[in-house]
Image (cartoon, rainbow, N blue to C red; front, side):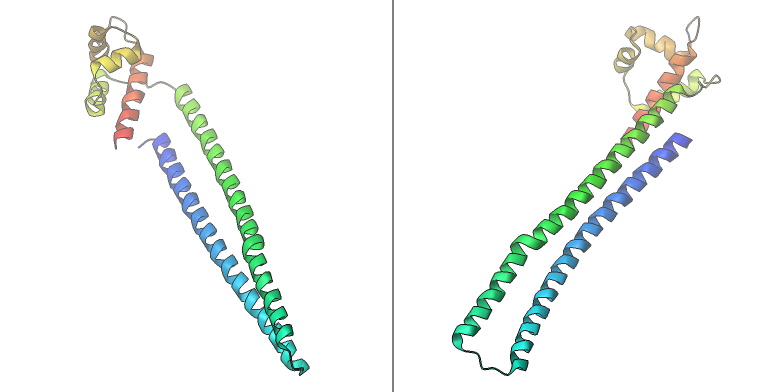
Length: 186
């Protein structure tokens, strides 16, 4: 494995870890918000009941009905207005972070491609090595002729190294193309 393959594997691993971490964080935040909301409502109800009991006043049916309606309206308000907004804000923040990570990953990919395209050519590349990669890649001679922008019959001359002036850049390009095809198929 060369450095670019190791970098790709490391980037894939980090992206997967980030994705799983974000999913777990969102799930945990939602569960926590729901639990906190329920706990808050229970405590508020208990405090209101305890205050009433501690005051020692008898409550009429009208007062009890009024308190019940107030508590019910507060519960409905919290359920419909408070938590969904808070959760949607959290989700928006997480989505923004994921989008930023995606942009960072695309930047890294572009830098890797730039390094791959500008790296030094392998001057000791052999036709045999390219032939082996060609066989492993599953590419056709038609596809390769189109990629190199040459005639189909000429592709085999390039592949076998039977050119009068072997083009090292072309052989290196073939090697990279075959390696990418092999990596994509695995």
